[in-house]
View 1 (cartoon, rainbow, N blue to C red):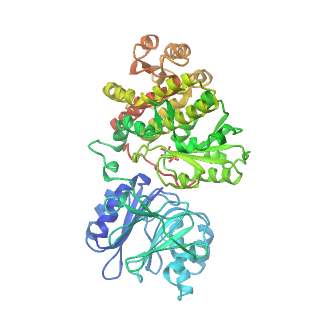
View 2 (view 1 turned 45 degrees about the vertical axis):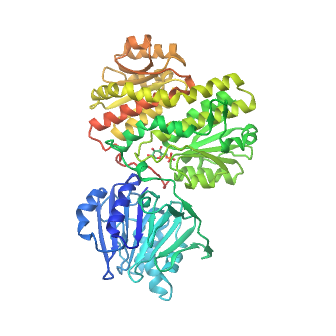
View 3 (view 1 turned 180 degrees about the vertical axis):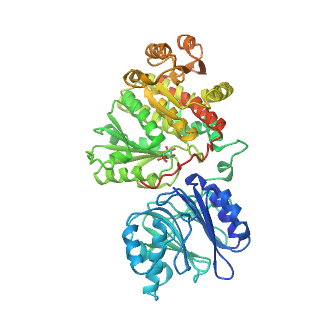
Length: 617
Ligand code: G6P
């Protein structure tokens, strides 16, 4: 949800900001802008609707003009994507520039007051209100220092924000603040970087400070980084962290898109998720987060899983896994619903939040609510040190490596891997799984990366060919049963997100209660039909589809005969236990969505209207 980059140092700020914005484009890409504090003491601003490339086209004349500047890539909240609504926003007197990620909820009331005072507004954004509020405070209290004025303004607003502000009379100074949206400060050699995540500065420094909730910082070459509480200005000692990220992880490495690279990385990413935790030879799972809190889970009245989007689908599979293997009741909720429906939460509940980014606003808010009510809160996140991972009582990182394609792929299969390990560990600990069953299952799980390697090798070309037939499709239905019902939901979501074809996922048996009415010779139906898990029932469902002339694209196990005999297209995957089959089946579903979208000419890494890190409600 919007990316912010800032820089003060000795390099060309234009290059640092533009390259940084390209890395953050996953956060939003409907418009982009840059402001530089040039050597002659004035701001140079360029902004435009469109992507960072469009910004470059209108701003290349700014190259080499400054060593201080900041930029923004936007995901619109207030006001349509347009040149006017793009950030940075400049105050009426031209002295202040501000970029913002988040929402100022009381902007309307402040705008009315400022309008009465004679302020005018060029955009429909909440951000332009904030920058003018800072100007108003400085106009009325000229004795205030720039950073103090920013602090006063922030105490007047509520909502969520990460901001960076520059003032023309304070050359080389950047003021940043955070409440609800992430911000990292990179500490270079005689230079400082600011960014929504560390990727824009990873090649320049491995040292960073992650600004905490409710903190702000004033940054300059002369005075370094001065961190304060927004509320009371108290001084805060910075915690400097060493970055583990490296540059190769955030580049495409020869693939046409990040999404394809990330699909192909899955044998490795799943292996990395299990590394040091699933010790197949010793027959144990040792995952600190869960092992240190086994009794908490064991004694839980129930486990509530909260998440959004793809992570919510992982949560549904988590429910099947934990209930089957550990026999602990599980509920799965959309975070956005959970937080607003006055849920019953007790101190005996364990609440698991699943979030790739660890920043999703709804998931964060739902988690805070659960924490307030005394539940034990556990996080499953991919991004190390993300907001969710920092507020939870305990948790497990998925360790899938940075995921840049907006549509989640390797993070999803890593989430399923973590959930599998949690369920198996709990089951073996509380005795619902025998030692023999546990050992067999962990051996199966350990073999999944090899099976995915095989799937990538053997199904890639087939899926590519199948995809060509569906470039013009208007609708798709995805069906599965048991563990593969959530896998069907996820397959449909992938297609929707990146190809813009309407797709619905359904439990295969539920088809007869509605979607069957849609089936005719034009309706493609993807059906996940592994041999283990309700196979006979699936065979009947395929018969029902064929009786209505629907086109069946079936995911089957090698050597399958019954579904094979009826399907129009086949994608063969190796057999595994039913509980792990969604991990394997998801891979061809990701490839299918990817190739249909590519053939339709869609921008798969940056699908329209979506963003990877959704830090607004
Ligand atoms: C956005 C992304 C989805 C993601 C969802 C939840 O909508 O486009 O890919 O599944 O957010 O994100 P999280 O980071 O919490 O897993």
